[in-house]
Image (cartoon, rainbow, N blue to C red; front, top):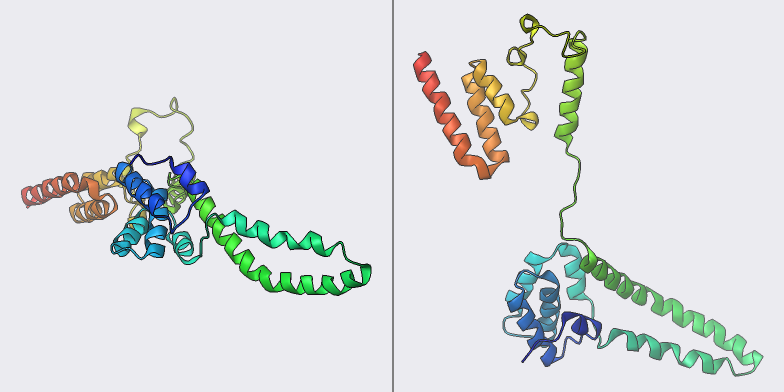
Length: 243
């Protein structure tokens, strides 16, 4: 069986359809990290009460960008196709308009009552469908948010410039007046720790603080643990030589 395009399944999704379930299974095998077919497959597995429904739902939840939206998607009832049910409810309305004016007056309040009673359920379903569609249309790239540490670093840089107002251009700085940043204990907060600052602590021969700095960096950047561990070993060697 050749799986149909996913757009065709999404347009006329029927969670009770066995053929769509098989097609979604094939799509998840071809594209194992595509979250949307997994969400549809999880819904179908839940409705059809498949043996491996729990495994499929867990897999779809791990791939979901927003688990709250995925939870709403699993809780709403999906008809096949969903748009046809809305058209049937609107058809009786024009027939009532052909009656006399007195009957219209009697029917209008009843129709308003019916709409007010049904509107909360319809609004909740529409909200759930819209949020799920918005979730499907979301770009999977992580959003870029400004970090607080960068703002704090800029504040420290500004304070450094204020404390050294004579530094205006590269021409005015002579080799004898070069400022050694290693002598200034500016960056000691954990949230501002960088590799450069750790090296400065080593230059200051503050080995204990340097070891602590590299340990903090290893927690912030676990992918560079081996590099930071080698730096810590080098610092321990320097401590032994100093003794």
